Every structure is written in structure tokens, then in C-alpha cells.
Amino acid sequence: MSFKSLGLSEPLLKAISKKGYETPSPIQAKAIPPVLEGKDVLASAQTGTGKTAGFTLPLLHYLSENPKAKFRPIRALILTPTRELAAQVYDNVKEYSEFLNIRSAVIFGGVNQKPQVARIRQGIDVLVATPGRLIDLESQGALSLKRVEVFVLDEADRMLDMGFLRDIERVMKLMPDKRQNLMFSATFSKDIKKLAYSILNNPVQVEATPENTAVEIIDQKVYRVAKGKKTGLIIKLISEGNWKQVLVFTRTKHGANKLCKKMISAGISAAAIHGNKSQGARTKALAGFKNGSIRVLVATDIAARGLDIPLLPHVINFELPNISEDYVHRIGRTGRAGASGEAISLVSADETTYLRDIEKLIDMKIDVEIVEGFEPDPNASTEPVKPGQNRNQGRRRSSNSKASSKNNSSNNKNSSRNRNKNRRRNNENRR
Image 1 (cartoon, rainbow, N blue to C red):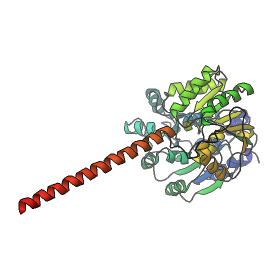
Image 2 (cartoon, rainbow, N blue to C red; image 1 turned 30 degrees about the vertical axis):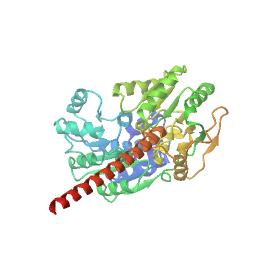
Image 3 (cartoon, one colour; image 1 turned 180 degrees about the horizontal axis):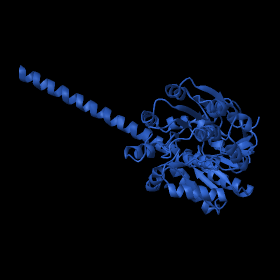
Image 4 (cartoon, rainbow, N blue to C red; image 1 turned 180 degrees about the vertical axis):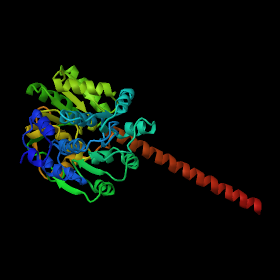
């Protein structure tokens, strides 16, 4: 099968050829035809399999084959959960529409809105946006969604994870009822399917790979290690392996900053990227990582979706995610577009449950290794630590709770004695 056989226009085929694409990926081959036919589509595919082209190419084909007024109202809206993903999708839209008379723009928070508004007022066909900035600019009267003909909800499961359901519902009310709807995601939970069928009309459901299956070409490995030795082990692996481009995931923003500092102290160029970083800092860090001036990018799960780094060889889970599905998205940053990749997880005793859940989700046992000098602690508890809390905090809280309980018990006894004394006095007075 070729892209030409899918029915795409010559200008799009020219742009595809320039990008070096020869044959469509499975999700592209399955999704593009029904989208071109104007049908609503519910598509599920692993990250890194070409979902973006799966909706962008037929969308651009439709818009170019059905031109509208010179004013150029927004005809297509692509909604994404994160700034990084919005920027990536926008870049793809620009690349694929290079030989078309199509204008596009991207809007997201964390940066000055004036250039974004100015771009929209010039007239655009395709708008890529994150929910917050979109709703904000619409409420200011800076844009209108009343002429939208195609609506794309990208990474819908992540949208729900990040609490965007109400924003999605609000955006839906701003668009015409009659439109084509496309929903693309790596996974589809019951909640997502419920949302899908409230948005889509008689959708065609396509799936390129089994839901939540990790990309098979990725070499997955677990290093069992004591919690306090993780930093030393990751520095050893990166230094001795002479790895030049490594994406590292932590569970918290504080953890990302702390690990980044330790990397720099060890002579490894590193940068952190998470929600507390300004958009400028995030963009600079990502650019440095892509051009090779930064060897290690330490990120929270905000970067698990939307980072498209060609030929990324190594992903390391410094800490396993407590949500199993996020593991699939994290490791999916490597092994993209058919390239090989390695995903390593440093697992301490308190992450045993997380590892078991991940292996159950991906239906495979991950190979385990132990590095001499970084052995796991045989006496450590396997009880998971709650996010944002270490085990000592838990013990202190438990201790404080017991002390508080004793005090409350003592206070209750005293109160009871006082009430009984008062009752006796009252009875004596009555007599």
C-alpha cells in the first residue's frame, strides 16, 4: 500500500515524499480512508506509530479540496492536552501543508498571547490549541469556533487524566453541531469510550495494535536497586555507557530538579522539564536536548506525550509511574517510526506493586538485572509510598496520629467525668 493509493492529493504526496515517508503506517492506512470519506473516527494506536499524520493528512486534503471564503474562519480545531504536543502537531501541519494554500496557528498558555491573537486575526484554516488558552481567547472575543467543520481530540485519555473534561464539554458547545469529529489516542478506557460516544456520530473504530501493548521493538529492562542508590546507578549507566541522549522520567517536579542537579555535579549536561518551568525554559531545554548540547532531559509525565525526538535511543524510568498506562507512554518516546530503542527502569522495593501492575498491563515479564554495588535493600518494605510522601513521613504521621488519638481519648475521658460531675450536682440541687 502507498500513500497515493489512499487517495491523498498530489501536493500532500509531494510533502510526504519530502519528509521521506514511503508507505503508511498501520494506523494511517486504517484511519485515513474513513476520514477522507467524512466519517467520524475513533482511533487507538500505540504512541510513536504515526497517529498525527493519520488525522492531519486527510484533514488537510479535505480543507484544500473544499476551499472557503478569503476571510478564512477557523475550519479545523485540533485540541491537545499539553503545550509540547500542541507545538509538535502544529509543526506537522506546517510540514504537510507546505505545498497547499492552508494557513495554520498554534495557541497555548505560558507565553504572551499577543502574537497568537495577531496570527489568528490574519485568518487561519487550522488551529492547534490546548484547552485553557483556547477558552481564554474565545472568552475575550479573540477567536470564534462557530465555523469549525472538523474537530480533532488528540490524546483524549491524557485529557481526562489531566482533568480537562469540563473544558472539552465547554469547547464542544462553542462549535456547530454539524461537523466531523475525530478522536485519536494511545489508549481508550471505559471513561474515554463513554466520552467518545457522546461526541462522535456512528464512528468508525480503528485500532492498529492491541490496547496498551508496549512497542515490541523496544528493549525493556529492570534494574533492582536500593532506593538511596538510584542516583549513583543512573550516573554510572549513562557515564560508562557514554550515552549521548537520554530521557529520564521522575514522578515529581522536585525529584526532577534534584536529579538534574546531581547529573550536572557529576559532569553530565542535563536539564529538567516539568509544569513549574516557564514555556521558554521548557522550549530551550527541549531544543538543547534535540541538538545534542544537553545529554539528559529529566522530565515528569507532562513530557510523556508530545515529545517527538527522532531516533531517541534511551529512556530511563528513575521512578516507575504509579499509573501503569503512563509507563507505555514514557517508553514510547523511544523506538519511534520503526527505530530500535532501550527502556530501563530503576525499581526499588516500594515500587514492586507498580512493576507488577505494569507487567500485567503489557502482558510480559521484564528482564531483571542487579548491578554489583547497587543491590536492592533486602530489608526494605515493598509497601508503595503514597505520591508526595516518603516512608519516614508516613511513620511520623502514624506516630503523631497515635499520639493524637491518645490525647483525644484522654480528653474524652475527662469530658465524660466532668459531664457526670455536673449531672450529680444538678441532681443534688433538684433534691
